[in-house]
Length: 604
Image (cartoon, rainbow, N blue to C red; front, side, top):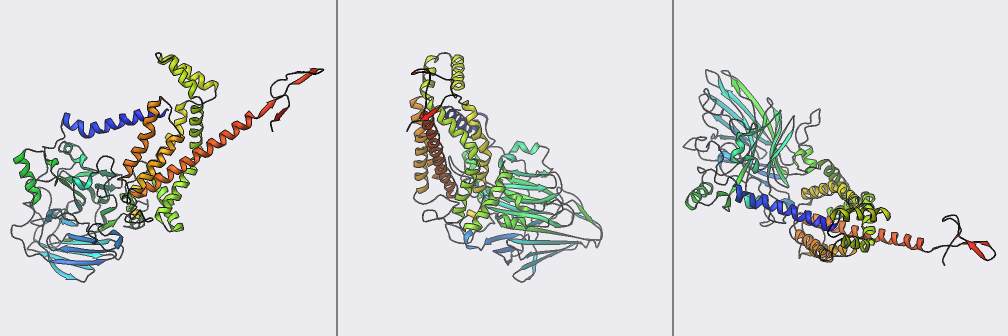
């Protein structure tokens, strides 16, 4: 496929992308003035008069957590490892980003949905009593005439892990019902989660993940538009439920995740919900809706617009007889998406589905990406540098794919050699596309040159590997705040002084000069400057780790191109240096033998 045709397809793809992003909402609307059909549970979920709040602190392995007696939920979780500190404030990163009591992580709601009778507790947002704390665990209790609850949150001794154990006792003289849900949450504004044009995936781009015995589903806000709640996947409470027994529910950003996994109790469901602001929400969220009503501007255009990402385990309804009790236990992991740590989270099942590393989103080519990441870690253990590990990983991949690249390089060289004849054919049949195609096919056949489409086939075979490598590096928390050399203080962020974009753009320009595209001169000139310009613009925003990969890959491509073309040129010169001599047919006259049967002498 000619480079000119490739660039046409690139522009077509860009036009389609821009249409779906900007044109479609203008033509068909995007639901910005419609509200999600969610019942308002904020006002009815807590008593009108609240008890004074107390805090309890847990010092765990690589984290510090603070919990509150209001709901017995998590208020803060700071990552104490220096590499995960906030790049701007130089303070430990707090992974708790919600602030409403009804949307806090590790909530343990017990009420059945709706107005069901014989509820075990009067509210979901209970005011607990802090009855014990020792720096490693917090014990909360709640009691009324009908119920006694004990909730113990404790560090497990493993990085970023805590257990939540809940005991429910029925003190009433009649049976009472409850339904336990435990959730993880995260609030992110649109500005935090969305990247701009030619910018990378945001560090805080967030999704919900629900894993069950049947499958794993990842969801983004577009799966929770107002019209989506009519789909069969949604429950009566408007949560999206994944079929099967719940293995874990989570909210996850590019480098961090918050999971909750069942340890004891009946098998729960795994459910997710991505919620937009509601008019009755307290503080800035409610004010946003009021301002929308006053100005008439779409809510999603407000700079404070965002979503609360929620993932929960929903246990089946249970009825306790008088003096009866039930015990539940879940495990939470709130921390970076380090593969070794996630692989050790939770109990391992016979089918191997206890591995929480599935929360890492490696895209369509995840099997390839997993192999590349595993090899990258091996290289790091050998060289001791993530930057050099990326370099050697790129070298390895390029060498393994060289047989495919070789055919493409040969095809490009052959097509360039035939350029004068191809230009003549294009000029001769410029008004007859069918005849021009036939003549071009005959020209390629006579010169034993493969069809350009065949030459592009090896490049297409490489695409899954390149996409997998790109995704693997984009989501590798190992690169987070990791320096490489004087100009790259962080492999997960753009480098300093635009060194990588400039060098990559210059390298791409050299590569274009060595491999000029086929087509008219104007098209060649456009490609000569357009492709380096695109690479330079991309690397202004992409993480430096991807820049190291792209730069290494470009230099290897140049080296392969030069090496192969020199080899082919040497072979051509060797063939052209062979002279076929004629054999005499009597006297001084020589007759010419059949080609290949006479003696050949190489010119000195």
